[in-house]
Image (cartoon, rainbow, N blue to C red; front, side):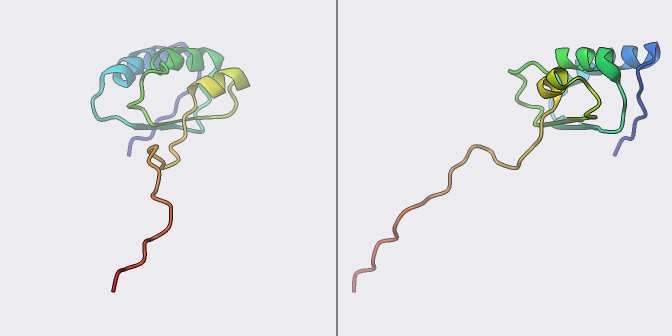
Length: 97
């Protein structure tokens, strides 16, 4: 587990900009937790560039709710564990004797 302490300093914004390359190109990264990192509106906007809607590989992206709500809603992703699969429902047939 990697623990980061990010804020909204110019160095942190630069680090988030570099992290966008990871979000866009890392083949196995699926979950990111940046909770309790107060990245601010500028940091959130930087991260949004690495999370376009077509980037379905990133299943969970957690950020602090201190972001403006519209930005938070565009960046935050919560993995609910559902993969879009529907379970079989219906009657079970009677066994023939």
